[in-house]
Structures are given as structure tokens and as C-alpha cells.
Length: 404
Image (cartoon, one colour):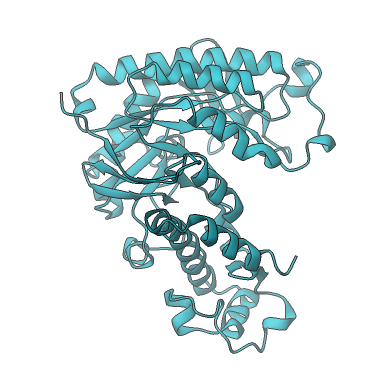
């Protein structure tokens, strides 16, 4: 049977796992490495699909859980599926909803994210005291996860099969197996339990997907978990690699300082001839590390989330447009940037929009940040092809970190 997703490697960097390639999907080719724009609810917040095309985005990732909650899978299907409803004719992905097992569970109401920036300041949970760590909006059992809707309080039970069924209705080109994304503060014992559950759910997701005719049109990626533990990460990579997935996602929690190590552990085991997606990673330094350690695609809400709050990427590092120094600055956000915002507007104008809370402000800032990250990764791809990746990385990071 012809696969819905195929991957060609065009160039590799000797001594690293970095590669440039092409992912072939039913709605077009993704040239890799590539940053995938996040459109959680079938919308990249504040941007139209024409804006996405203009800034160079190749693909969009939407979220299964959020679309299931609103407007509902039946309405998505009635509108013609993800591509038609949002007016996007390029490649698409949907996250399985597994991250919500973390964000509505262990991460709910806390400051814990999937990446620990300071491991020493956050000791591991010593035991799973039911009252202390009981999830507020999700409960997990052997077969799936019960979600309490933050919209109306209704209860919804998602199994691996149900997650895939919903993703079939949404209709993205690449979908992901249902998994459990654990907190980086969890004990090793719980990471072990969650890993076994993720592997069982992966098998069930794949079996259900392959039993349906739509599997000829949608590719399914399996997700590697294992937290910050080398043996668990490698075990997970081997287990997921042994299943007949079309590609792979690398998910879960990381130590900020060892992110690249955990990614390398996994990618040294996963099959070379299938694409690898690093879930929820989008900072420039992390993208370089992900690429040189074998990842092909990335997604993260950071560029647009930061933009809505006035934080902008520049070649010299991040700036906050609300700071007083930009109120009379008649230069562009980032000198030499070719995005729509930099070509047409000044820092002073963006500062005014931000302070007056005009809707145009988040739109222009989002255009710039996404353009910056999308084209940074495109530059990595070209550098791999040109055999200049090392100098491209060194030159960029030296300037980017110069103001710290």
C-alpha cells in the first residue's frame, strides 16, 4: 500500500544527526528542517492564512482536544475538515491531545512547564499523594483520560481509539498517537508507569488507524516519551520505532540544559528514513540543538504568544516593545528583516499600538515573530545543504546572545 507520508533525505552533516529533507504529504511538501505554525483551534491567533503564506509558513498544527471541545468534531467535518474550514491548502498536523493530560493534570494551576530551566529548584515529587497531586481537570486510567471541560464542566473520556477517531474527522495530513505527557517533576516510578501506558496507547492508536480506509490519506506519528531518564527515553524510542508508524514525535518533559542530549538519545535509535517532529519546542537555541541532533520539524506557541505580550525576536536578542526606549524609535523591529511589519512600520508605531491595546499590534508582532522563527529554521536547512551549518549557528547565536 502506498504510504500517505514519505520522507526523502537530501543532505546530511557528517558527525551530527542533522539532515535536510522533504516530507511528502497529501497537501504538499514540507522542506525540512521546518518550523510548523501552531493554529490550536484551526487558527493561528491574529493571522489569516494569506499572512501565513506570505511569511513563509509551510504547514500548520492544530490541537485535537481543543477542536473536539470547540466547535466539535462533527462541525469540523461538516465544514469540510481542517483544510477547508480554515482556508489552508498546505500540509497540516494535529496533536493528539496528550499534552492536555499534562496541562490540565499535573501542570494545572502550577508554574511547572514541560521544560525545567532550573532542576535544582524543583525537587521531584516524593510520592503521589492523592490530595496533593490529584489533577483538577483530568483523571488518567489504564484505558484513557477523563477530561473535565473548562468551558461547561462536562466530562469527556478519551481513549487512544477515540483520539484517532476525532483526528480522522478533523482530517489533518499528519496525526499523532494518543500519549501521556508527564510532568518533569514526576518520580521515576510514575514516569515508568506513564511510559508503559503510552506504549500501550501507541499500539492501540496504530491498530485503530490502520483498520480504517482513511489511513491511506493520513499519516500517523508515534510519540516517544521517557522524561529526563536516558534508559526510559531509549527504551521508548526502541518500542515506538518497532511499530509501523509513518513518522515520530518526540514529546514529554525535559531539563533545559540537557534537551539536546535527550533528543540525541532518541534519534540515534529511531529509523533514519522517517521524519521526526519535536513537539512544543521553539526557542532559537533549542531549534539549533534539535536540528543538529536529528529533528526535522518543530512546533511551539511561543512566537505568537510572546508577540501578543509585546516581546519580539531580533538578531540581537529579544526586546519588549513596550519599553520606554522604543516610544520614539523610528527604526524597524529588526534591521534587515523582510517581514511585512518591518517593511512598513516603526518600533515607535508598534510601541504605540501595544500601549494603546490596539488589535493591530498583536497582529503585526505575530507576523514578525513567526517570520523570524520560520525563516531562521529555513536558514538552517539551507546551511545544511551549503555545508555551512556550523558557522551559521555560531554567527547567529553570537549576535543573538550579545546583549545578555
